Image 1 (cartoon, rainbow, N blue to C red):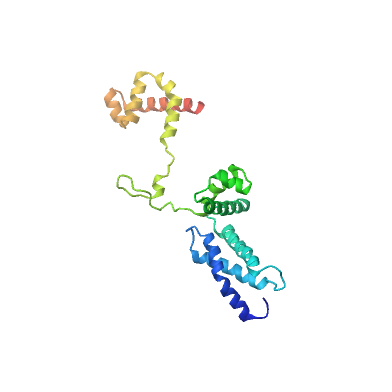
Image 2 (cartoon, rainbow, N blue to C red):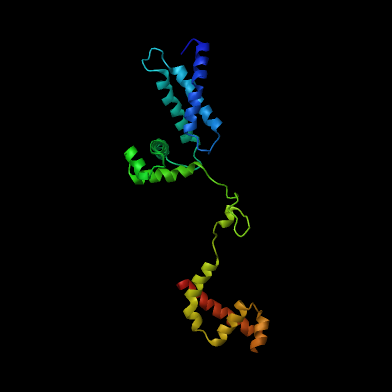
Length: 232
């Protein structure tokens, strides 16, 4: 279609509805339809500029694969929020097209086994493609999650975090035997210091000994337990 600008423009205008129809085939609400129509229209323009009138093939038969190629390339290069191998991206699109075709034919959503049979794939490959399809979209951690007891919070509030108490459990189990073997007075000093958070002066007054003795006993006992924990 070289040399006649008016004929070129008329041909493009004539097939723009087809470009929109192909864009609708790939529209799933994840991105604006106008963007997909623009991509398909770009494919149409390329098809018009490359088409040779001498071809025995009808223009529509030539243009449709070109427009579909542009749409697939768009999704392959821009439609993925996460990194997905190119081969898997192509598989996702093939599974999606097969699923739509089968749904039109049967009037219901096809099963993974039916899609696999249609594409001569294994069910595992189809399931992998269906799972990878979610990589085209992500959700912000600041997005609100469903209300719980009337309270609304963000998704990030539902994420777990490292609990330092787990490490304390490990240490407690490691020194449990050594702790049980301590004299009753030493265990009581540890309890008053670390459970009741008393000062050395308060412990000394409660036990009727000097603060220096409490300091010495604490240092000796803690050092003994530390060696046991490190050796475990």
